[in-house]
Each structure stands twice: as structure tokens, then as C-alpha cells.
Length: 108
Image 1: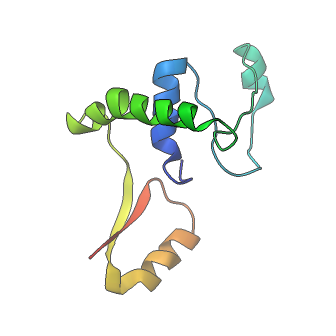
Image 2: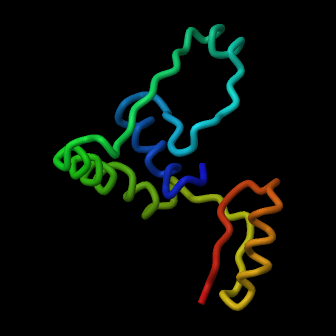
Image 3: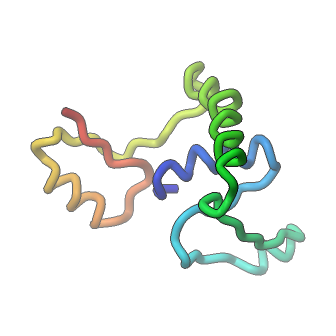
């Protein structure tokens, strides 16, 4: 997941709510045969329209439930490649080229 931290939110939702939503973007590919075989369902929601209190509760739950997993190494973020900030053009080319699994990181 590459949509502004969506991967972390996916982990939070999976851990706390028992499902993994798709954040960001209006298009997604879905194999309905697998979905039906697993008796799955498609649901939608947006955090943007939620009250501030609910957003704050989600942030606190993330801090309490997910960040410790990163701290002890039980959860990691996949990194496709790391570039120096001076190589931002090459980093963008790598990003735009697709076929990556993980984040493209720029370092100072």
C-alpha cells in the first residue's frame, strides 16, 4: 500500500477490526471468484468525513497498538530502494517505472 501511510492504517484496521480496507484511489482490481469462495464482502468508508474525536481515537489506537510492533521489529515497512536526495530525479524514475514492492526512500 502506497497511499500516504495506508499500509500502517491497514495493519491497524486488521488488528483492531479484523479486516483490511483499501485506502486511497478510486480503482482497484478484485478477483470476485476468490471473494465469493471466502464469503467475503466489499465495504467502503472514509476517515475524512469522520468526526475529529474518531480520528483522534484512531491515532491513539495506532500509537498504542501498532507503533510498538515497529519498535520491536515485529512489523517492518518494505523498502524497494533508497536514494540520496540529490538523486531525486532517479528516484522518481524508479517510482514512475512501477514494478516495485516497497517504498522508495530519499535520504538527506
